[in-house]
Image 1 (cartoon, rainbow, N blue to C red):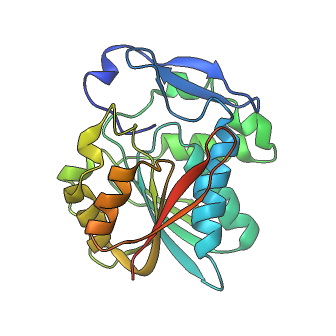
Image 2: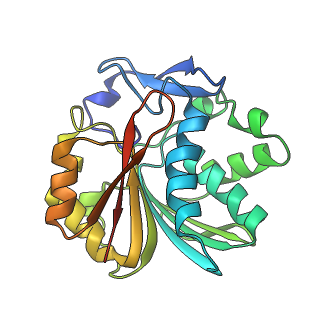
Amino acid sequence: MQTKTNSVLQQLPKLIITEDGSTTLEQSQHNETYHSIHGAMNESKHIFINSGLRAFHANQEQINILEIGFGTGLNALLSIIYSIAEEVKIHYVSIEPFPVSLLTVGELNYPEMIGGNAEELFLSLHESLWNQPIFVHDMFILNKILSGVQEVELSQNAFDVVYFDAFSPEVQPEMWTTEVFNKIFMAMKSNGVLVTYSAKGQVKRNLKECGFIIESIPGPKGKREITRARKP
C-alpha cells in the first residue's frame, strides 16, 4: 500500500488497471501494489470509507482522521467527497514520507470515474503544501505530513478514525509493530476506530496488545476479511 521504504523506491511505480476499471500503482521490485488488483476504488470505499468513516459517523459535526500513507490520494479524495455529501467537517492528517510525483498522479483515473468536481478536488489534495493545515474545501482541512509515522509527534486523544494503509507486513514489517500501534492508540479518542486491509494474526495480536478491541469484518472482492480495531 502507501507508506514506503527506501528499497521499495529504487524503481518508479508502474501504472496498472484494476478489475473495477480504476488505476493503481505497482512497485515492481516487490510486486506490491498501492491498492487491490481486484479493484482500487472498490477496496478504498469498502475498507476506509464504509467500514471506517461511515461506520464511525453518526451525528458528528466534525471527524478527525489520521491516515498512515497518503500514497495516491484516493482515500483522501473519497473522504472529501463524503464530507461534502454528508455535510460533515473533516480534519484530515496524512503521514507520507515518499509522495507520489505529480506526473504520476496525472495518470490516475479516479476523478474521471467519480465525475463532478473530483478532478479539481484531487489536484487540490496533491498540490496542497506539506506540513501545514490547508483548507481544501470549507468542509475539509488537509494536513499532509512529510515524514514517517515513527518520527512524527502525534497529539494524544486527537483522532476519531485511522486509515492504516501502509505497505504489507511482508514488505514493511516495521510499520506493523506494537510500538507504532501503541503510538496511534494514544493519539486516538475513546471509541475511535482504526481500519486496515490486513487480517494477519500477528497484526491483530499486536493491535490487541496495545489495548484495541479487534473485529474481523468481511473484506472487499478478493479479500475474505479485513480488520477493524476500536479504542475502548
